[in-house]
Length: 191
Length: 205
Image 1 (spheres, rainbow over the protein chains, first blue to last red):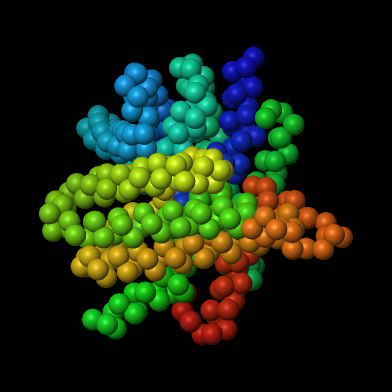
Image 2: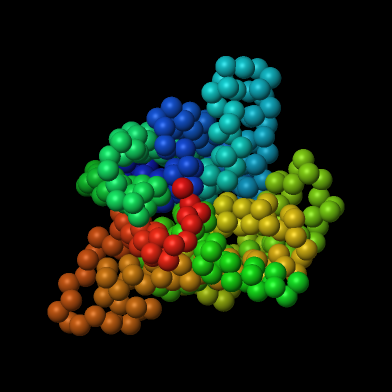
């Protein structure tokens, strides 16, 4: 029951993008087309789960037992950066189709604060292994959900008459605000 | 030389002011600007990291091999961020608690890496540090501005002091998540309007 609660909280109530404001740079960058948004979402889900598993293990088995918590920031970013590179190389070698679909998004993910943010939130909440898996996957799915929904909105925005000063990023941010307002409606479901 | 320094120094305050002109580093701009104080704290922390990282990266720009430069930049930045994190926990504990995970997240703030790649890797250390100071201060000003608007209208206070009269009904929408997006979007629109009125060219798309 607790796990379902955690999942709903991570996907909807505390949506990583609209509730915790993480990963906004790619959010505005790749959401102009639905296709790229879907590609990015899949890449984020994949990398987030992998990165969280690794950072959790290192944190639990190396940093904590030896009292090295102050190195958290440095280790986490290094793990994420090298992991992304590794995943890129493996995908390039193993599956050409997958690489063509995800390849361009992978380097972008290193600087996507959603991945690092989820890893840090897990460390802060001191979650166990199963909880960590549920939290990271549902957070990433929530990110993908918001990104894909938002890309749909932006495709519509391109054909509507927007005041000249509001064009581009300005209207995108206001739209994101209205979407965040809609996500606030989930607040009663979990905390 | 003197010209270039002045130009670099002022560019960060208007021509390249983040996060409006340089649309980078939006996450902290949205997340921590519930109050003017948080915005200022976050801005100054970022400015500190940005100045030192620009200086360090620029000094090492001829030693770092091109292929692994991003990884090297990240190590330098992460070290500086860890220093800031430890210092803030020691001297500004309440602020550090409020900013929470957003302090370690300065590592992945696109501004820091963006300036390292876009400016420090091509310019000598002194000018790079000036660029860091200028963009950093521009960022701190922006964050304080966003924080002030949200705090004054959303809670009726500024830096914790009540500024609106007793009859003021706070627009609590502004201090929660959606308000952040709408505030930044509106400021951006006003800035675009002003730039158009002055006949400047747009930088952002």
